Length: 185
Image (cartoon, rainbow, N blue to C red; front, side, top):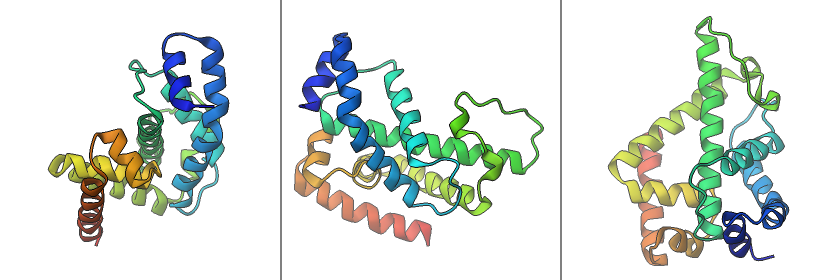
């Protein structure tokens, strides 16, 4: 199935297309979620399946549902997964400090912030802070990192999603990787 066509039809309210879209993107989103989770060791309470389900719910409930194409959809899905991981890490960090605030999860599959390894939460929050700094300084390079690293998009797909040439994407990718390596020490 052509994902871009399904996205357009689902956007127009076609319920059958929305159901077909879920089936068409689920395995790709699951692979993306597996890659996200594979980058951080420890804690299996937020497995790839829980992460992809949360991301899909987030995307389905998004106020803006205009997807230009497959690459754009997966770039936004990747950002949603990053946000879910950061939220979980923040919850872990907050519970570690003993905030005293009762956490009531919307989705029990993402519960268990207390079970997260402290190093994992710290690592995710550190990476997020560095990426936010990159985004402030070099927004286009930050978008390229999200598409390539978090979204798993190729150079061409990233260029298409961002409206850039493949050579510009390649250059931004290399510069951003150097910047991130220096920032992360």
